[in-house]
Image (cartoon, rainbow, N blue to C red):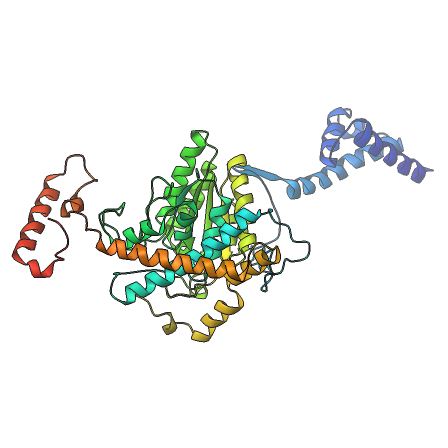
Length: 468
């Protein structure tokens, strides 16, 4: 009988405490019982009544259970959100069991993957994308040869990375502000920078917008919202965040976009920029061209993480890994990233896996740190141009005749642009000292005087075609 009463009373007690009274845990019920039971000496408080004795016992039991549960369920309301506790010693793994997958639309043969999801591309956009990829490749080839002939002092190609250049540019708006590294001339090409303008910059003539003060391939255009290339690695990243924050504050329907290589992610500016962007909720796209080699250092010697994409999460940034040699995948990823960045006021990190087929620059011989067979395999098996052309042709938008006409026209335009650029006069010497200060300081004026004296004293050591 006593056992039956004990069981029944337990059921009644739990029902009352958990359902009718609404306590969420045994600890809450314990405190309620202690507060409401008679308060007197133990001898007078206890009763031979089995229900009363059981209630008293339950108080002690619930207190014991409640204190244990409180310890395991406590959380710390720390800046950034609540943090739970664990009695286990648990270290976060240095890497996931599986690598972050890579988004793609087209396979290596240019065939669309089954059930692939991508942003539709019209015939007009697709044809322009492919045409500009071909143009970029041909421009690089001709300028590279011009440098080898001694007609240019320096050049850097985008061989193997044409899809990242053109497809990302196609997915952006002309109002989006670009902060490039030095391997994104395709973005300028897409926006309307002419072959003559490219040639003027490379030859440093008086028609060059930089007035001959920059190295070749360090392009810039105020008109096309393309900040001038800086040779120092990754310095453009914090600048892009600041510009993005400005666009946000002004309520502009635009974002900032900055490009960098895997080597750039090894710089401190990369980490500062990502943290800055996340905290300020700046609409900026970080597009990393992970071509595996930086200047000459393989990624295996740069970091132990799963590439660059995983670094975004550490800073609270939404990220995606994309096949950088798949033009449709790049177009779709950048298009979606831009929409999110502007609509949600957030930075996005895109890691584009690609391969630098060309040398780092004309100052580099990449066969000293990688095999020629490796370069050739990537150029043939993962070529972004042939891959995209296959898809464009499968839609009936391109032909061999169109290909021949395009390449013939671009070659003629390039040779003419170089001819004109070479014959155009150089900028005046005084441009070396202008456009920085409204009133040049004394030390700068002294430098100009010294340069002019040196040119007059040693004319054979200075180019004769620079007007003084």
